[in-house]
Image 1 (cartoon, one colour):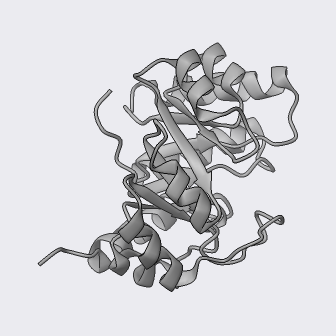
Image 2: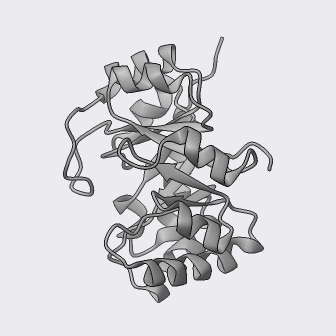
Length: 213
């Protein structure tokens, strides 16, 4: 697989039913979303696989990677493009053995120590969480904010996708720092016009993006 484009990374809202979920994904991809993470914390395995299969079929012709949150079994069942793991999920080395060298593995990083340790792991990107406190994730122990993101960029060997409290207002300052991508949930999933929301977010990312001298 070619190197993923992480710039506008959509993490889905599990409150969406399958029909609405597919609508939001299709429209957001038309607006510029470049990678999708299907996040279903409270669905049983069969329900998760059903949703994942529907999303995989939708994205097949769009050439947009599908990442499954946490569940390696679901990723294998639908032949997803990769998984995103949390710090309490399956260890990265075991996940890589199961998935093979060609699948994408992302890892949530929630502290300075975790980021330094991740430099030694066979992952494709880190999800730096949380940049700002957010209602979507209620177990946040640490806010990176802009200063922490700057530190992370200087100390990681992996692409960084920033997540947490990122919207039209907060995105420009994040993009200026030089992050590889931003993960969006509510600003797209709860929008009445996901295509427009994605397009405006991507435009804000591009107009603010750090350009090395």
